[in-house]
Amino acid sequence: MSDIILQIDGKEVAAKPGMTVLEAAQSAGIAIPTLCHHEKLEPYGACRICTVEADAGGRTSFVAACLYPAEKGLVVRTRTEQVNRMRKVLLEQMLSHAPDSEDLLELAGEYGADPHRFEKEPSFCILCGLCVRYCAEVKQKHAVSFFDRGAKREINFIPEIAVKECWDCKECFPLCPTSALQAAYVLTESLLTPPEEPSSCGGCSSCG
Ligand code: SF4
Image (cartoon, rainbow, N blue to C red):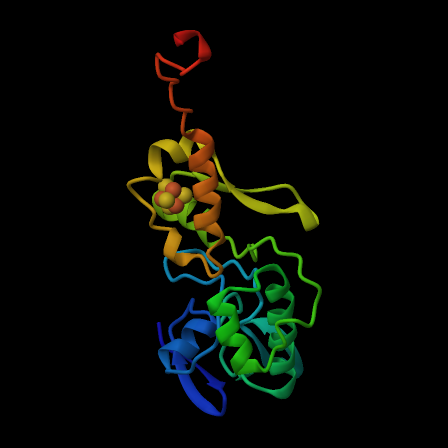
């Protein structure tokens, strides 16, 4: 099949059929920020930080580059004023949940995002789902999962599976953009560690 020709930031880019805008941009050396993307995983489109402006069929819209297919004649702009503004607000919202995330703070610097704009609601997780999807899609273990809905949604390890699988794996740990995962694992681990057996002598007063 012949290549698809589209335009990204004024540059003509040849993409393979089936590629997304993000993949086409990356193949042409054009950087688009991502937080929930991983090349081994199915596109997810959770963080929206890869939002770009795209002209197709006479319409301009804002699309997630990690999901949007590279199409013939598509015109994409990755760093317009509006795109930058959207990314800035998204980062400010995510930083209210994970104020110490180095990945987020680095992007905040690039986009002029104010880490203190929104009231802090530290859950330390931005729900990118990288750990959940990596464990399910690559490791096929399902040792970590989403729980609850809406504002209460969070990730947690499934203790019975985690205790068997995670100790020798830990492959998802470095994927976490906020380090929330390690903390969740330490907590799970502590819940799974049986309390130490009391020694035969409790040091009570009856020994005299
Ligand atoms: S460390 Fe545990 S949760 Fe993470 S990928 Fe490995 S098995 Fe899955």
